[in-house]
Length: 446
Image (cartoon, rainbow, N blue to C red; front, top):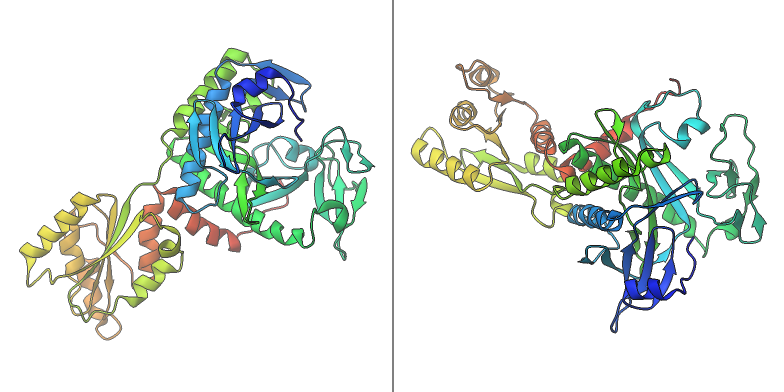
């Protein structure tokens, strides 16, 4: 929790009325007739709930740049974020939010305090299905009228009731009894606030998947992060606060490049260098413009199964910025080879990050012909294979250097095309992985 700043230095840096100041940032009213605020990152770095504290010149600028890069990517992917624009090197503007008193943690691997709660797991234990956790944000070891043995306790449900149990996050969960059980009205600020928990989990999970792929593309591994949420003036749920190098654990060749280096006593110059490199890496976070080309031999070819397979993953609904374009080409590559190849070259020159799905009713030779004429992946769907099964061989036995892929089921062809695009797109990766994780299980042992 934050405390009201009274010092002239805080007001001068904020450029407006200071609403609150925490260990690493200042929140100030934005000048003018607006409900927006400025969030100013400080050069302070802390650990152990403030027990360890240092100043790293430049950290505030790196933190702001990291957060702005992350929020821009998330916004492009359809995640509602409390972010308007970057104001200067240490400041960004955001809508004023009523912050919810929870930290939501998402984990791909077991690190940090998770190992204290689950000591049977080894460090780095991989979770195929993302793990989520809630912590109640407290200060001074108090929650309202209750005294607590620790700050930011782990939150867990009480089986058979709507109560919330609080646990010491630094002790093993097995055998640990809650040190406090609270009624709903002692935790939540207004009736039915509990309904936001599922929304927070889903939003946090999707956010993690987007950033997981973004870091994969940089050759690093995102293993966990913590995020916070707020409600805007209209009661809408937003991913709020910041996501910077204090918010996550990122591995590079098995070593941390985040705040964990500072927690473990790393030299301040080494910590500073890692924060700078992380900010530089997030400068490259982006969504590529991609396309799926559905190639038909005739306007009579029914492409609805392909379109439905693409829409199943929400591409049409989420990619409002048209980061994934779906184009249909009607051209018989046998009857009009010159026009067809000219059209193929034109489309792939405009958007080279592409996949072709050849969906031909009366001939399976189009897929191999297209594949032989381009360097982008081509998937052929023998639309009439049920009536003429022997025709499949024309798509399977192809000449050398004709790497066409053959998929019989149109919906699987659509998914295969999306999986190819997901190799470079945080948005498409998130959409596919989010559905996949619904069927995955985590092992309960090391």
